[in-house]
Length: 506
Image 1 (cartoon, rainbow, N blue to C red):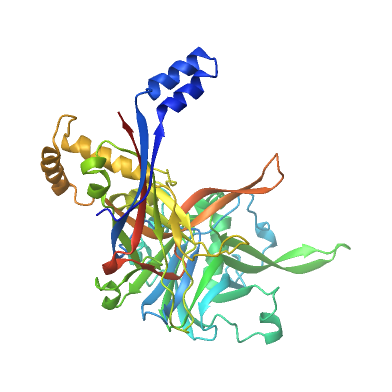
Image 2: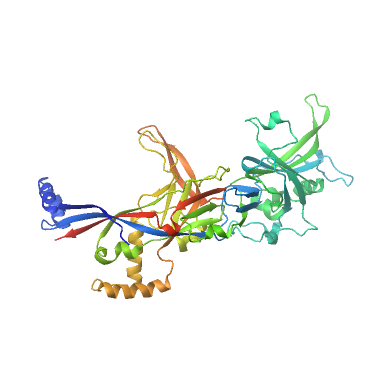
């Protein structure tokens, strides 16, 4: 439904033609005449349309991210429960080396032995109660079923299918809190302290790694060989407690051992050695998410919709293409279209989850394809908008998301439907509608888009002319951090789509 007309302007092409002709260039003059004949005029109009929106559960999607979270929390505002686990492989540099075998301390069987072995989760960011008691269980991944670079895993992957059987796997469970209460407060509260969650592994596991190296050094040549022959990685499973969630910046697998060496004077000595394997965003990680969302958050009568991560809820919008391009607007040119999403003012004093920093607008049927193929917003069927949370001297922050120009999407949907339905230039409005309805029945989601929270990666360069820093978006991924926002809309239809048209008039 068309709401109101804000602007209607008529531009006389005769004036434009005179201006072009005055340039004295024959080519330019002819071009002006061809494009805009003197007897024609151009009218423009800006119209506003309400967009219907609803809250939808976010289905399992491609599990591709460079950040993993561990723990479980309950959103104090909505009561939604979220728990996160992850699987991680380890990086092995091609220059990996251990001391010569004859230098290593050995056991009774004459083979090298490890002193100890640890997994460490290094983390800085967290949400919730830093003193909440929780448990994590680590379980070794089978090298024959380890994560593959050519497989698009989902966030609901059955991780149990990747693990070694209980009798063969390294498996440990530890209790922890985000704030390490075993260390002095003066240390862990300092800005320079990097929080670490240590998980002791068995000495036997560390010894197994060392002996494998000396028996098959080629299996330590790179990360791929290591994951497929030595250690397939570990599954970090949240196994108890609730109240906090930490963001894993990187994970290490540390093996400690001793070996014989010489001092500067030539005397024999024992040296404490260690070898570290790391799991960073450059190595395959598989996040796993579970959400328990109250049914009340899906109530269609609410005057707002939700966007909530990780992979909990998103907003679906139905674009009113019939109203925009039907009737008298069928032959109009769509110059621009903008969608303004206002956020709902929060009423609770509870500690709330942060709002998503960025939303992705993409066609509902293209979500999986977008993330599976690591696509970028193309300005035609996919767009991103950042949260406007910064005030300036000239404007105040709106704390909303504005997609400034989705006009190409509207034009694309119009053309797709016309082409698919077989609409011709000579069709009447009634004939077009009959063809449209038949095509729409086979394509029910054709005019639906979804709004999903995403994170972006940027490259940083310097403008050669001004010397100012320039940030360029180079990657868009599903947001696996905790966020939540309410958007105006839902049953009230307060989402505004502004469209600017133009047409030639004789």
